[in-house]
Image (cartoon, rainbow, N blue to C red; front, side, top):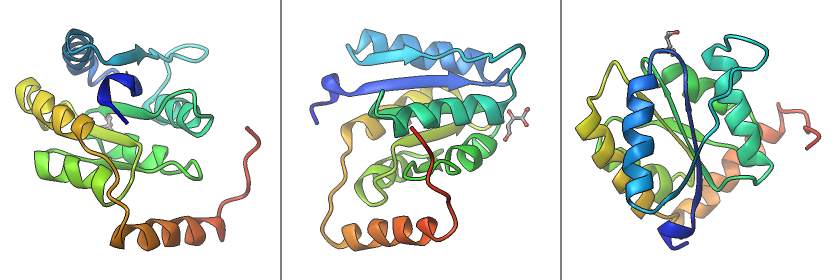
Amino acid sequence: MEHSRLKIAIDCDDAATGLKKVLFDYLVEKGIQITDLNYRGAGSAMYPDIGYHLARKIKEKEFDRGILLCGTGLGMSIVANKVEGVYAGVCHDVYSAERLCKSNNAQIITLGARVVGPELAKKIIEAWIQSEFEGNGSLAKVKRIHELESETFHALEV
Ligand code: RB5
């Protein structure tokens, strides 16, 4: 999909509010359709609630892709992967960000604001936006992931 047509959601916990603003402003300037979900639930939501909220919106196809930010990127990745059919990976380098789309067909990228600085984070997000699933040899592998998760996940009502 032409990257300017991608609908992207972004959110973070309290460890990454500064990085979220940097990336949000950067993507708006680039003409990307970006929505800051700024989820706080009933009060001060923690990263599990914030990450799960965004991942559900990807499952419901409200957005094509998501960016989740916390201190390390790890907690957000773990929780986003709890939604069946939604896949997330931590990327702190450009090559991984490309492969996350090209090989793994994951919809969500996570980054840690305590791990990468804002300029590297922009480069990582730029590479991620420019990348798409290549299919080919990777198709059977991502299908296999879905088969395996179907053995343990219960179908969710959406
Ligand atoms: C702070 O809550 C920190 O644990 C969180 O931002 C994240 O790094 C978890 O993986």
